[in-house]
Image 1 (cartoon, one colour):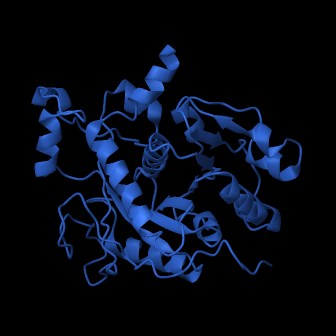
Image 2 (cartoon, one colour):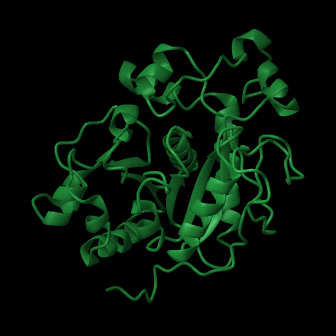
Length: 310
């Protein structure tokens, strides 16, 4: 295997992160009992909550499960997927939509088997207008038919309308929340904005979680059951910019650990707390500190069929 491929694969081999990603994938499959969830938006309430790391590691979990998955760069103002995956296409989303390049030429395989990447060109004008076109909606349907899963990494909900627009076109949306930083009031506002757009919120993914007992298990055992020294897996402080893969690697940081509850019961964000209070582990949540309960039941059917488009 080439050195570059080994370097890319090493980014996804942290045992806690790998296990959390597989758990997240399992929970998405639980939401697909009645009708498959194949197209997924991953967004966050604000910047630097780790949504891109969630997107890429979820895609890796899908790929290692022998499913064909495409990850699409739709955070057009702050592109980072190409750098993280170490792939720099000459054409991308805008070229495919405008017809200057074929979709097959714009989609490239990554260093990870079964994982494909569709980038967005830099300096695309009016991203929200592009996402609102019939041509883009048709592209989403075409990608859904071509892959087992399609993941769209979008800008934060509170900053741009892009995530809400795209959420109305896909089967489900994941909202990433940073523990002890994201305000409850902001989570509630973002969730409401997604609901107004008729998004199906599959659940939330909490990042930067504090250690619990499961962390100590992984500190002593690798995924194949081999015992290792605890200090070899002792997590260091998180980088200042989690979505910057260069600083993430150079500073020697581990990636955020996150999990999502598989239970279908609804849990609305609690807005009775002061606006200044961040989401804390276990607050209004019976699960472990590094789990977060789904905010809405997965009862609404995906809208990839019979959508009304303007």
